[in-house]
Image (cartoon, rainbow, N blue to C red; front, top):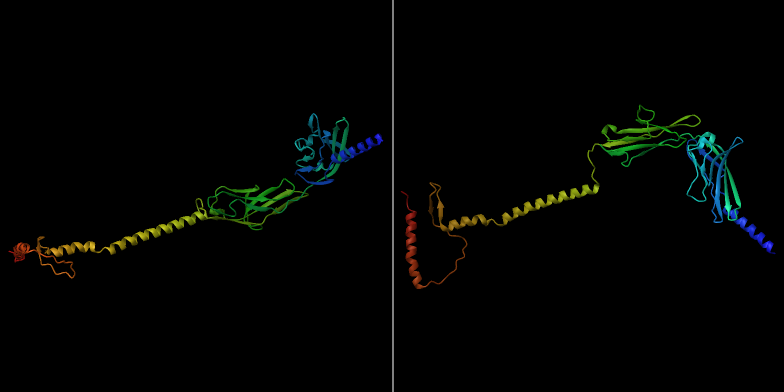
Length: 341
């Protein structure tokens, strides 16, 4: 009975470990010539098993070669044509996928991922997974043009760029033209990005680009033409909200100036007697200037339409005193208004 229990436990443990350490990935992968590719090989780690070795081999035309090997001594790449182009992650436990850069046509074939673990009882467990890799050359696609941050309408003197983008097997060669496809176009650049350090009005026009690569044969694709417009504005453009604030402030200043002018004019109209008071004062005194030798004479003041006389009682002795004084003033007045010698 006890032996039966141990057999059941052993079989269950083996089945459980097999499920945990099972390698997962794909069977067929297609890579693009001169591009990068990842061959997936992943398992779920277990505390009861420690990874000891990882080996990637390539079977091409019945010839088996080791592409990559990782063990306790480190990483090893035996074949020189793979050095600097292949690697597996170092800090992702359970992920031993093979990364290949700059795929070449000879890289196609059957790749096998082989992983070995050591258990606590020092027994070894190995799993393998094989996949087929095919390397193809993809013709370049029709390129598209992306503008810079300022778009296709840019102020004069600004800095901007146009980017030509296409997919396909690298290397991809780009060329820029000013004009329209099929017309009289001028070549302006041989890079993917067309730069403008300081735009001028003469830069306004239509632009298109070409993308070229070598798949089975030479392939050239042209983009649609785009319109680049350079506004005749120099200096830094102001934001719209700042322009609105400036206009509102200017209108407010104009209204304030007009209000001040109207208030001053109204103040003068409300106080016209400031000037006439002096004249009326002189008239009441009976003073008149003839304009000859700057001589002035006294004339009898004309009766005024309005007065604010008030009656006061005069004592008898005061009347007797005022009588001779008035007579003397009248005599002096007649003498002064007499004919001049």
